[in-house]
Length: 341
Length: 283
Ligand SMILES: [Zn+2]
Image 1 (cartoon, each protein chain N blue to C red):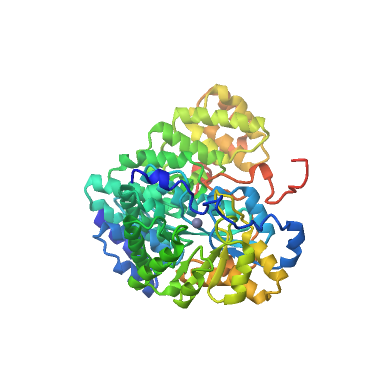
Image 2 (spheres, rainbow over the protein chains, first blue to last red; image 1 turned 90 degrees about the vertical axis):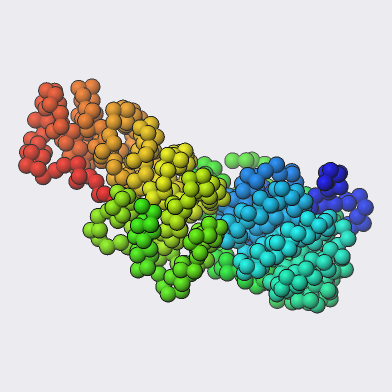
């Protein structure tokens, strides 16, 4: 526990920047060049941490066709000192963040859980487990997540197992975070434990897959999610190859955008790349929209009619009397203009 | 008290639930605290948002809790308050700890239910900071749940907090008539704040609801003559009526002189045609 800080200075979606050979593809494409090719597509990002994103992101996401997102509870970077900060964080996922998102016409859901990294603080983890049932049953909570392994410690395993039981009892899908280090073993272990607890693999989304893990995940009946995240996870050229090889069944794409160098437009950009590579619209639609809905609708908390045909943001709407759009601001404005009116 | 409250609420629940909904409510182990707390949260997963209609003319729903009403709540809110009624039998420390946890983790609709339940919870003073916070906090639905049709503030708010509640209701253009006990808790400090408020509103060229004048009625003095004169000049009949009622309650000579300039209303008020209750529909 004492060397926790030194061994965990690499954030949850961001690591080994220097050793990575991956060339970031996101800078090679310009919005102007690809936006026309995905006109009319609707996208669902089932893994994005909007708490660490700006309103600019919401505007760009809405313009790029993202109509709904799932925000999993995660490690916010700064270690927590008490239960209250967990309560405030979970409350923001079902409260303020959901409201902020709605102001940009994006439907916001969340998954709630104790992050693997935070499972290593046993005293706090125990307290969090006591209040989790008060959050997972709230309206719009579509799963338990993201949970699983990080350092693959005994404590991580203990709270992973406890939360799988909670998911079973609550009849909620599970969103599994797979570790950066020793990923293949961690992924296999996560799936084996889920099966051991009697979970139906079609209720479990295994996240942050790569070429090494995808086959086994799909073969065992789990959903395989892929995070398009510059430098550290998947680049979207690799993603296209995976879709070409494995098809669209039970595969979904997300951005996992958070406080690291990440891209909230990862899905539309990948879709554009798939269009340019001649992948059918039907396949693109499945991996960027439908499969995520299919997986998380099992919660009974996800209603497609809430976002399928879009919903208009009401700028006069308030959350707890507060508005994001101050003094009559509109959800969209011209960022390319020098003047800020 | 708690048991009869639970029973009263349950009988209303029964007439608004489907068979499946009632089965779920029945299945909750009421003596197991954690289960009740979880049920409080997950109620929307099992219940519809049917609007509760209590029989008209029922008077006080629960005799031990005057002013308590569930009219126009939805089924989820009523069920949540009913679930909270089972906490009433706990030892104080345990009760407070559980309810505080629910407050700390609550989303908007859960907060509404918690504030709606305050009149039926024991140890009313314990909830006072939460309740006065709710008045301060600007949360639309939450503010309504403590301020309107809720008897808790009337019985437990100190004067300062009560006055804040009333002023904020007026300020937010919500109906003061729905504040339980509004007519009984008039006070001098409140009337002074209201005169200040009216001055400000008029300076900004804005209206104030006519029934607000009810709150200053025992405190009219000669210094308020300009208010009354201006009110008599209003295009709204209710304003003129409010001015007349204020005059009718004063024995001060200059005020009576002003009243005499409006004989029609003076006559009608003396005949009992008008009183402040014409301005108020009570919840
Ligand atoms: Zn994440």
